[in-house]
Length: 144
Picture 1 (cartoon, one colour):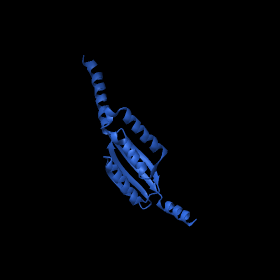
Picture 2 (cartoon, one colour):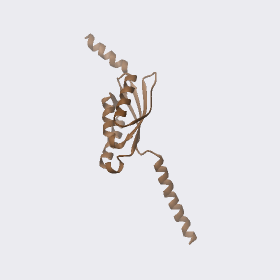
Picture 3 (cartoon, one colour):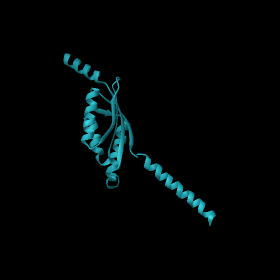
Picture 4 (cartoon, one colour):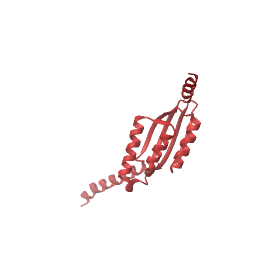
């Protein structure tokens, strides 16, 4: 009888370890890249306000001298469509993979809203800004 208990114990222990590891990771931890022609400090303020307005949490934010903005934020999955909308409305252009991942998150959440609406999604967003190019284009357009 003891010989049979060891393999069962090992299998149960393995399953418990798998569950513990799964609970440590966020299933929807998204890394996204985007570009924008909005001035970096204005974009940081607009994104922060928009995310907070949708019930999200901005965990960190910052801008470099080269115009790169980094933001880490979280939100309940039930507000993913709102978050997706305000990111676009703030003036950023997500990469193709960013759009695909956000669409996948929204579809999955909609299909399983009762089971996962309260879960937390995390986004690590990097935005490269080009504010000078937008101003140059406007000036050239006005001169013509």
